[in-house]
Image 1: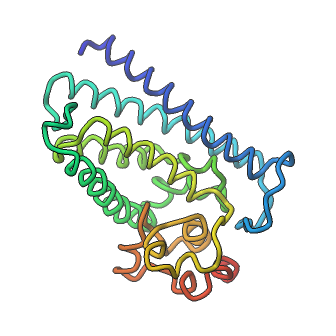
Image 2 (image 1 turned 90 degrees about the vertical axis):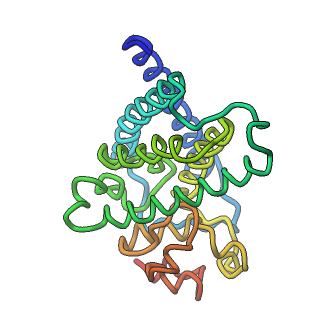
Length: 256
């Protein structure tokens, strides 16, 4: 791949990522936060303060910078694929449908593990200011916060996406599914509204998944709930807030 081709792919991926961010976050924000929409009563607001345009603009600016770096990452992966140096494949028959499903779930678990320890490290006093403070500047998150990451954090998050195509055989559709899942889940976690009932975290299955209340507690307390998709590592390593299970509806109120 020539320098011109790399620049073209970087610009193209930047555009795709940026449009995806503004489209998904914008639609979700419009539905839940504008006066044109009345939120049904079961949906509980998780905010402790009004939304400020200054903080939304800050999140947007960080997200544009993140889109630049993720675009460069995607172009680098595209270049590696053209050289045949990755384990990405295009024919399902090269492995099987069963492996395709397994690789998707396994990749999510690897990413969640990587993110947990990375995220927990970001909250160390020595690293927080330069690597993660920008993401927490808004206090209570909104859908616009979903991709508001400091540059160094983006680099380390993108490193996972680059590395995994070299260590795990993945169908191209699985990579796309991972990116879509990451986008939707991040917007979901930063929604600022809880859509489920108080029984949600006590269900035998849902108790292992992260949602808006779970992550909103992290934005309030800082020292708990570091996972991306699952609560597994938080529960195993003692960073899970017990009030989330004991009283889901009131957990966030007591974390203020």
